[in-house]
Length: 77
Image (cartoon, rainbow, N blue to C red; front, side, top):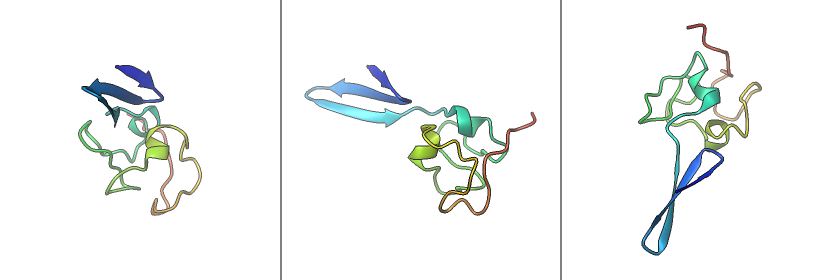
């Protein structure tokens, strides 16, 4: 398995399957995060956190389309 920017690539037979890690350093440290490792959701993105934020290509410190006016705030717990 190869590790590339929070993605794993697993070779199955003649096919490479790419999947995202269940952990995001940005999202999991945010007070709005509501995921549990099985889903990528938060108050800003109740359906699914966009890949660009989950993969830390965007730290979500400024408005992002569809974020309901909520951006990253470090959790205090």
